[in-house]
Image 1 (cartoon, one colour):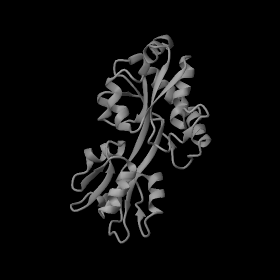
Image 2: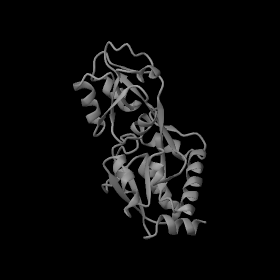
Image 3: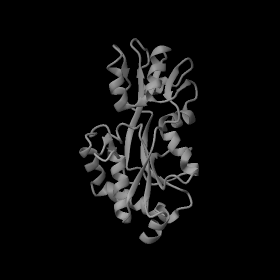
Length: 242
């Protein structure tokens, strides 16, 4: 099985790992060699080590760009949030970690809970094609989603247009709320973005290998160790067993 997985996941002899550089919890810096560093790159390094091949990182500015490249021959595995829309072109492993997504509301807002956000007249600023935007687009029924190109742009859109809510990952919203006197982060979550390892849909042996690798990495404490190593304890959590 390992030989077949290696042949599928590293057909060039090198594991080309697509990395979403915009997730500041999963990519926390760079190595002295200039490669991305963090929980996500370390997971890719560990996959390559298990396969017995070198790793080459293929960075993407946004998760949407990484997902779009699934139909091209530029990456062998892609570390990205697993969402149904992306699963049309990417075969995902189980999640190895999760990040809560919730809302920030401005000073004086009458909104007290996550559930109250989805109602008529509420405008939600959100980073387009983020994993949580894909979830919102599938589930929001009454509120209006206001799309922005990137996380910083969604914050600017929220502030400049005096919108009723800003959707985001809780760790980022903790930073944003400090910039807005009186603003609040709502308790609870509307979803948890599940970070997984994806590959091409026709790589069945490779996908089975990634499934087993991720489950072992969670059970052994390896993922928890990466979270601690990169200083994101309390902001990333190990995903439950599949």
